[in-house]
Length: 159
Image (tube, rainbow, N blue to C red; front, side):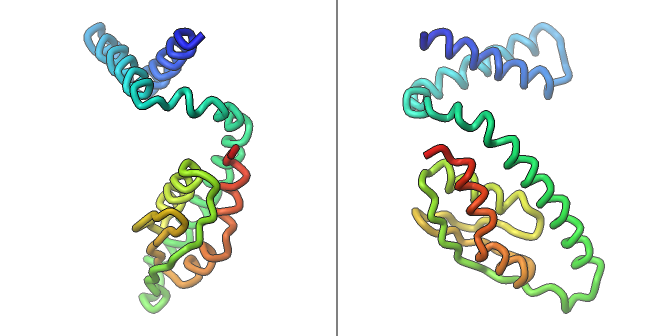
């Protein structure tokens, strides 16, 4: 059974690689297959597949999170555009510490990456229970402190 899982992982990685690659010549395709095999082998060496079997729960939770995050990215992009083109006094750069009561390292990483993907915010440091982030405005810092993003991540995390 593990062999089938690895083969399916290689096929899935290669399908994504094909979609993003755009160049379909034999040597390039061979390098693509080799890189997918290498990624699966390295992942196996790190013993992640055995520890991450419960991650199939993400299949139905993560698309809703992605849609929410995409919407947040669009909204904050417009807000940052207004800040940049508006009066300079509107900018109030702030560094904020967020209590990240994440139940796993996966959730903590997802939260840190989501903060960075949202325009106007940047994750500076991640500790076991705290995330330090830079925000362009105090409003964005207060939104992060409010915990809406943390609650969304908690819904996604299967732990």
